[in-house]
Length: 224
Image (cartoon, rainbow, N blue to C red; front, side, top):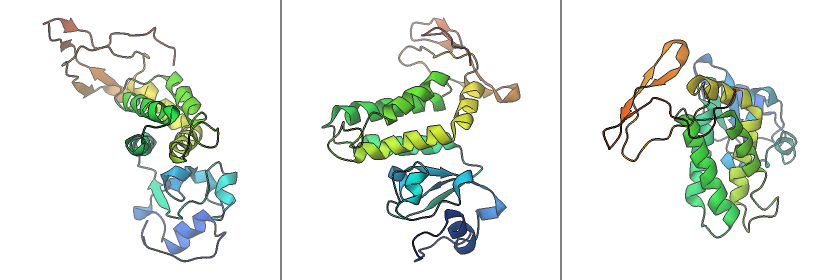
């Protein structure tokens, strides 16, 4: 935004008014893509939800955990939403103490899935897996002792639900054939941009001297 800072305002101010009137709008005239209303653990609002009042019930009605800390972060339309998903899950996976199995195993698995999507190995079914994890971990579903997993859950649920079209477009663009690559230890992937924004992988040479195809399916290809 143009004027970042600390603002003391009455509860209930619409999120869009906070951004435009007090924050001076998005930097360089760009458009809002998403808004973190109170720390990543609360989830995100989409650009269609900027009329959400910033009070104790408004964000909840928009699918978020709550108002949280009130630390608002604005993401413009140039920011890839997959990066927000990755940053959020990476933080919660790092902070997990490991006591509760759903958090200890679920959040790192979600992070691994997101990293695979970012590498161009994602499948459309991965988004449903992320939602299933988000709906299964935390105090709210009763599967963990503390609320750390709820933070990861709301990142997963709100981002995947509200920005599913962008995530699906990313998967279709970077892995149009729906393959998941199987590479030997030590193999290096060289990526080169191809026409229409697709990603092609150059054939690799494995540790045994064998040439590996650009795509070698581990599972049956899915229809995107």
